[in-house]
Length: 438
Image (tube, rainbow, N blue to C red):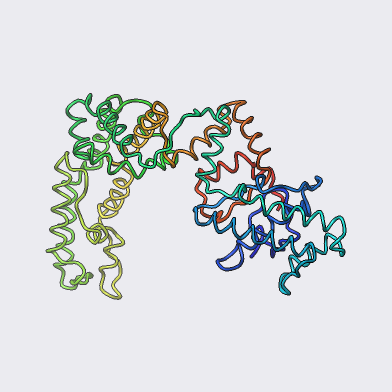
């Protein structure tokens, strides 16, 4: 187990001020270490960044986990460790021989079990063990819900909000609202293009739903705040022109490629391996290329990966017989490679519509939830994050200071599992970079 990925961790001397990242493999004692640090925080032991060490109670030490089972296990392990330590500090029991941490922690509080320092430490540990029913050991969702309720004024949330486990009804309403507002006004060409992607609102819902929890990571939708009818016709027209430009000339290049390949293979000593390059294969490939170039409505170049590769300079080089030098190729084979690159960078309609719909449905769903004061578990983190955002002004900083006063220290278990949103939440509160003392 290491601290800040650079030093072996000593739980007795790890500074308790600032931001610390502890890296540990499975089975190396992560829960044991959390309990050890918890003891020190309860006792006010060690380095607190130059400030006098203040003992903390269980309600002040935020311990964050990601499952309910983990919260129960952590609470039980911490309680047991507090009880064990209290008995050892009183002299009623001895630490296990291998428990160097507890031996040394007791030694830091004097030699006399009846002395004032040891007695006071034992009292704090026992009191903390009794208070573990009120300990701040939470899943992140449960903690966010608590903060939104306890700080309703500063977080801008209502007291009478309901938490719903199943959002299917609200989601269906949001999907249908977006479909009616966005799809119904479309003119025929745009409508036909959209229906080719989503024949119904049910298909849209099936594809959009998995993206809703990641809407903030998707960036801005192509149309910005504009409705589909305002930007989709222009986007389709621009894309149609771009596709027409890419197709230009390929109805003529494909026959030229066929003629060159046939002429080379007709030579007495063709440089190409007949098993890798055969007329029956490349004739079908070039027929497909010609049909694609001649049909303005067809977007996708329907060729196998083998065909796409073989008709490029690299693919033809792979088809040469052993020891054969590469022949001088006509430029259209390299141009075909470039065509594939250009087509890959041509933004597909499906991705564009999906991005737009994800933003629109998420926005509408949020409106419906606020109007009905009904929210799902997935909303809790995002709502607390918004409440702490600098964009909300003084209320956000006031909320931050209130939560910091409530929880001056946070221990986050399984930190590698935090999402970008969860990390931003903790960073808004504890300002990780400002307190990086590693």
